[in-house]
Length: 281
Image (cartoon, rainbow, N blue to C red; front, side, top):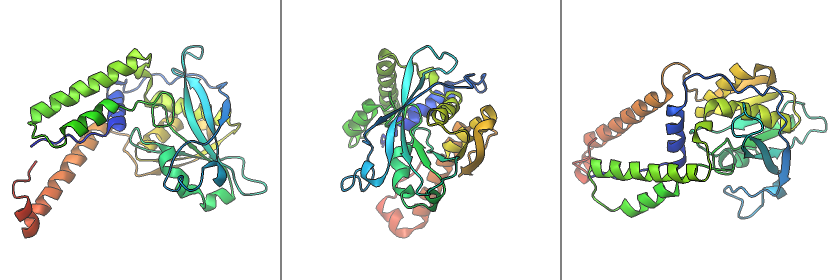
């Protein structure tokens, strides 16, 4: 039996990274002119139903950047940003920028709650931003077509071929909708993403930043180190994705190995094996 198990946003961004050039010329906009537009804080996290992000001290808004940084007069996109100001009377001039992984994970969905009482705030500002294409940035690359497909097929006994065909059709529908709305999918890659880091930094008025990236965010950190070293005071790479080799291939192999290990653990356990004796890859 084939069960669809889809992670719409990060899988779509995976595909975009796959088709992007392995190494292209970095977008050359060394002095970005993007501006920060303040808005109400609308992002959600576990205690948002009781306390609004604004009441917790967050300052929220958007930074408008070129869809392609080498074309500053072309179409633009908006990056969602939340700033947690330092509690110090004289904070350090270089904030902590935080980048989620995936690719496709939302920093604004994950990090705010963790950083509220973090001692880092006693020394410097904390800046949390949603990377281009992710949940609160505009446009986002969410694929409701895939969510709909998952719900419709969850209880169906599909063959592997049937499941793959339906998945491909849903991805195609998602891509067609986005491109039909004017989204240039080729602009959603790590090179533009690193240029966004520089643009957000400039828009918020910081000379240098401390960068924290986790999982795919470590690759974004490496791209930023290579393309904009002058803006970085320090870099923290957490759960490092190796720079050598294919990120996509390694991820697929790791997932396959993990599934096989779980299945073997079940096979070796009498209770589990009795419950699902036919479970196999």
